[in-house]
Length: 227
Image (cartoon, rainbow, N blue to C red; front, side, top):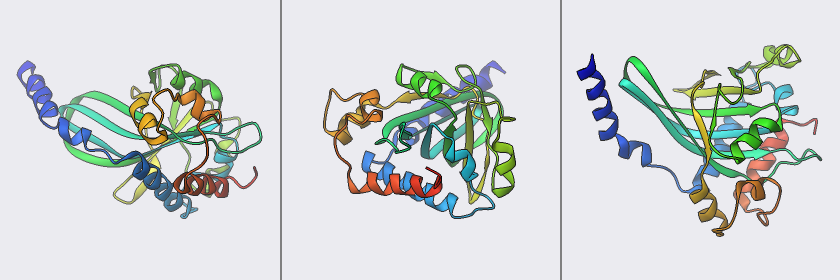
């Protein structure tokens, strides 16, 4: 067993470049917008609008790569936006999602991940440093489609609801143990400021909007029309 685990680590290290092949910050915003529009365009399989109506924030992480050979790992980068007091959405801060697992597994898969935050507590935790799903906040696979509307009331106790899309399928997914972190390098690259912080971006201190940000915000506003 020890030799197998060592081999698993060796395979993951050899596949490290796969994890590092990521899109440019602008392309991540465009990909996130495409994912949101595609998922919300299929009402019977998308995120219930009532869940987004009450959301404090949303993270969209395209192309999360999951690789396993006894030792498993997942990694991806995307964007995080929060809703202000007036219902408007912030500019996006770039984030990363990283996780690992141990068990009998083999293969590779790319998935799109969406996290819906019910309150600002979890978002503040991400801005303050490394944040682990399931340990720092309760996370659960979210309800899907119009039939999930009834499940988005007070009976849902999790602070974060998670979704994934793989090979055309969209459903709730368990991401416990995965860590969320601010991608400082991507923020600095996209906004052109080394001193920019995630808190500054999410509270409206990052300057104006680019066309891709405007499109992403418009997509979110259309998905949560009550605001």
